[in-house]
Length: 203
Image (cartoon, rainbow, N blue to C red; front, side, top):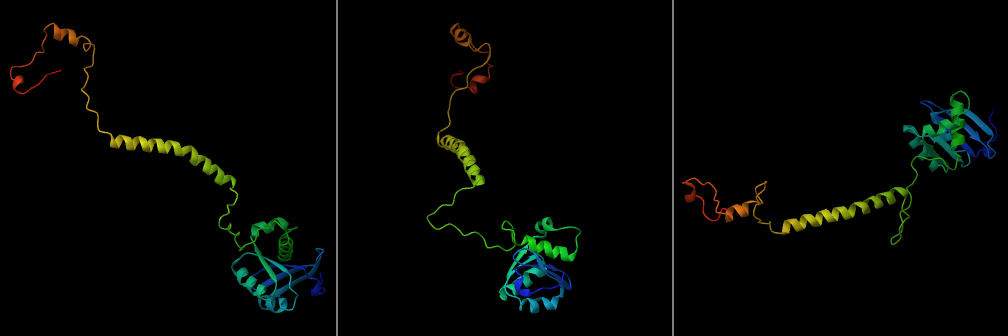
């Protein structure tokens, strides 16, 4: 399509190449009014003579430098990830259709641009509404907190309380019969050398 008046350009898509750039300009109705191939040195010189407009480019190494140059000229230059531009490509891929897809994508209100400023932090004293992820994390923490406190308090009480010194109970089937046997005069079979070693009651 031949070049029409540059004053009608509202949106521009630039497909960045190694030595040449493919430019596609759209008017306010979305019709193509500019379709040209420029060299790298012609981009800044020609865009300096065009009224400020919205310019879209795919994010790459050279696009960041060019976007800063175009913003200094008064244009609204925006960078987009290449994967988000593919959905607007029509027909077989070539450089001019890439530029047209970029010009279409940069106008979308839901497009995510590279280098957007972060959201403003909430003012002091105000709380932003919690998201679903933060709410679920808070619920999980509240469920774990009683168990952590109970285990911690139990460990602290155990560390502060003195150990129990209880005599070891006799176990086995003869344990219940031991008092009766002792009352009947039964005595354990202790070797003759044992009384010098064993002192005190045996039970």
